[in-house]
Length: 97
Image (cartoon, rainbow, N blue to C red):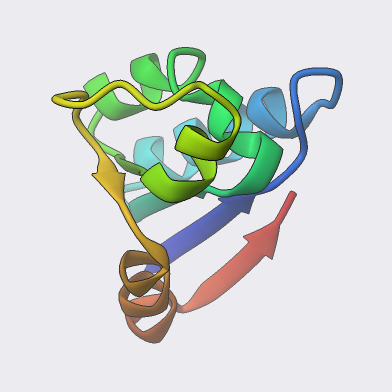
């Protein structure tokens, strides 16, 4: 199964921690995981680096990050809402955090 997680909650939320826990458990169970960061959720890119290292695909909306001053050109995982659309089409489940 492919699990897609959409994180939109900012730095003062539990979105990143929840995505790490659920994504890690899904990877441990042999599932594919995509995490997409949008809006204020783009602040969590560094916090989700361990999940990327474990095999998850971690993407962020670079336009949303740029609006907030958090975009870093050359950073792995920069993308757009097209990437979110592709992930949700392929996923068996989508959870919004």
